[in-house]
Each structure stands twice: as C-alpha cells, then as structure tokens.
Length: 209
Image (tube, rainbow, N blue to C red; front, top):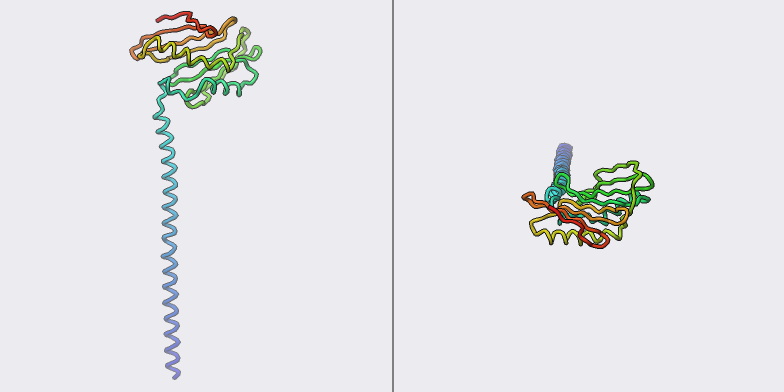
C-alpha cells in the first residue's frame, strides 16, 4: 500500500512538471510574435516617414519655377509679408525677377531715411534676403490697393508681343509725380521686348526691343 501511494505521488509530481514546462513554452512562444509585431510596426513607421520625405522632395522637384504662370505667391501676399516685417515702412518699389531660374519678389520701402529691402520666393513665400540701408532720396508710395492692376499690364504686354514671349521680369516703381510699370519679355531664342507704362493712366510710354 505504501509503494502504491509513493508511485501515485511521483506520477502527480511528474505530470505537474510537464504542465509547467508546457506553460513556459507557451508563454515564450506568445512573447515572440509580440516582439516581431513591434519590430514590423517600427519598420512601417520608418517607411512611412521616408515616403513622406520622398513625396515632399518630389513635390519640390516637380515644381516648375521657370514659368510665370505657375507662380504661387500673389503680389498682394508678398506685399502683406513685407508690411508684417516693416509695418511703418512705405513701399515704393515692387519687382519680380528671375534668379537662377526661380522667380522672386524684391520689395523696397522706407521709413524716414531708412530703406528696407526684402526678397521673397515667389513659389514658397520664403524670405530669401533682407537688407537695411540709409537713404535720403526716397519718395512716393505704392499702396496695396494699387497693385491689382499689375496682371492687366502683364497681359496687355504679352498679348501685344505674341505667344512665343514670356515674362522675364517686371518692376513697379513710385516716382515723384507718377507710378511707372516696366516689363521685360523674352523668347526661348533670346529675343527681347521692353514695355514702359504710366501705371496711373494706362498709357504706354515706350516699347523697344
């Protein structure tokens, strides 16, 4: 009878040990997928981040900054940015020019005898450069409500020149007695046309190649 009890006890202990081993194995197996999933999720996040950088780079690369029609920043937006920077300055010159195949605005203004100049990327609104100088001969002012006629003069010059011409640069400048608007047009073959308008009256003052 004692031998039988001992055998039963040994069997129970052995069975309990086996179940414990299986449980440990199950726990170990359950842990591994969690680690793998975490690694996979981390890879996915990194891949998404890389994709985002790639898309942003591609967008910048796809942006054709050589075409005047593609300009994203309006003259009014550039004017507002300048006034945010120099709220007391009077704007007396606004220019659109192409530098390294990228259009940019250059706005000049003055407050007393201090002149402020700001260069703005015409596609991203990024400030490219700014300068402050002392000038004694500044005069005239261009208000924001006056810049809306620029597109009219650009269209008039392009219509007169012909479809092969495109905008190289233009300049709106306040003189002592009137505001003048100059626009330079070019063709891919290098031909040039220059127009000068009285911005207030719309009169074409000069046209030359």
